[in-house]
Length: 458
Ligand code: 4AD
View 1 (cartoon, protein in one colour):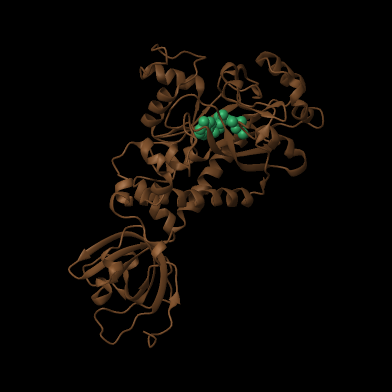
View 2 (tube, protein in one colour):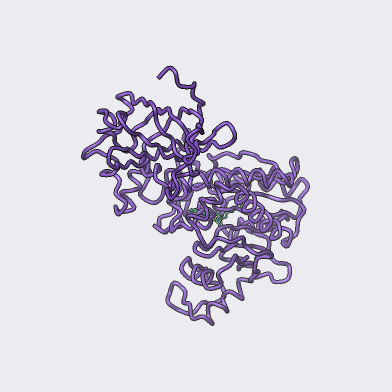
């Protein structure tokens, strides 16, 4: 109808004075005429009225299609996920009814080009994606399941959290760098290296950017990166991916206590920034109703005290025996302990033998390292970090013990030749952090297209 006012183009989340709602109790009042685009998230027919929940990635809007408009071929055959362009008047929802942002769009016109229509019948999205399907099936259909409420909420929270990390680092003058993914050195043990042929030389997908971050300290001060790390993990656990997003930072001229305080600061500051956004906070609360800010300082617990704790609580090691000093605390035991304590824990001072070659020994107890894992209820280890060996000879000794040829590491050991320093850093598994924040059972649901043992698609 050409006599209607020209529409204002809006996103479904837009609010503000440019959008007036018609007051349903006041016959004189008029709402803004808008034009929206999106996909049919849900649809419901009530007598002669078609109610659509439209989705555009920014929000959802209830659309009311009534009268002749509800009787067209397009309306009668409308399928979920069909794309639409809709024009109409914004109104308050009638008393007693509910809709996103307490408003609805009363359509006066809509367009559905033929190729915008979503498949129906057997091929309808509701038949392809069934909520009770096996998780693996849902992952095969990830490109479609991503359109669901929970999956899309996690991805939106993920975007906000990644931005918050960048902001939190910038606030304290930590600079971002971008180390390579294709490397010829290992960081976390040869067992989980993805090897490939690099112009006839052996190369690997990086396990961690740590060693490269260390090389930036002399010229850039503290640095961080948000990059992919790769691990050829041959186990199917709910917290291991073959490709994960690793948030790593390295700090110069610090003590071990400084490192712990920094990790605590970054994690809490990121949460503060994320939860200050009402849209994101609501999504987190929907998925994780019991979420509360962690209290600072985080509990500190030495590895040796954790062993004693596990003994006291009769939680056995992987050989079904009581834990003893030197055991790697396995995932199940670690999670049991974290769930019982039920708050963030800094587990520190792991034995040298079960930790990476580069970790600094504790000057007060040579058996252990200045290392830390941050454990969170529900997930377990989210962060791993340490002080780094800063003496050339110590590092060479460590390579010898691990059976690693130091030659390929010349660029790393040179750091100990040209102005060494007490320094340390950490890596935070982004998907694990999200699994904790969004209360997800597995990290697989916290990345766009998860890669893990046996899965490299879609
Ligand atoms: O404890 P990790 O192996 O430590 C390092 O790689 C250090 N070089 C990091 C550093 O100091 N810059 O890994 C750090 C974190 C873990 O705590 C975990 O959250 C995550 O990375 N992570 C994984 N996340 C998902 N899937 C995997 N296979 C992971 N392996 C490690």
